[in-house]
Image 1 (cartoon, rainbow, N blue to C red):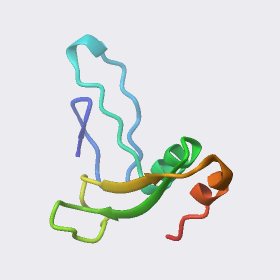
Image 2 (cartoon, one colour):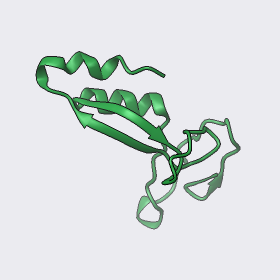
Image 3 (cartoon, rainbow, N blue to C red):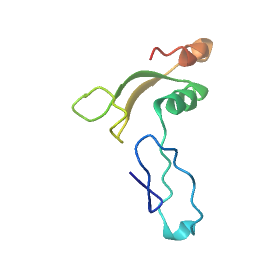
Image 4 (cartoon, rainbow, N blue to C red):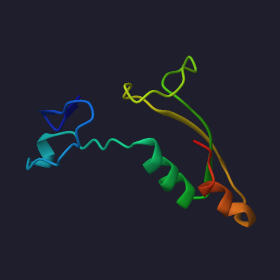
Amino acid sequence: MKYAESNVKYGQVAIKPFIHMRLANAIRLYNLNEIKNIFGARGLRINSTFSDYKGTVLCPKNLRMIVYSSKISNDNISEAYSIDD
């Protein structure tokens, strides 16, 4: 994968390079656990995830992650953190 003009092998951690950000695309890649935490903190429950628009099961080899989520009422906010893997 390309990250800030650097090649990153699958499974390696992408280290932030020193570059002039006005000349580059600031892209951040998230894994599913990070997305769960971000969505949960904002009161969203993840209903399902996919690798493409055809509904293919999420796979770590694909860069695209499609997340279908719904807003949780404030009374049930703890539900956001109890997502089954």
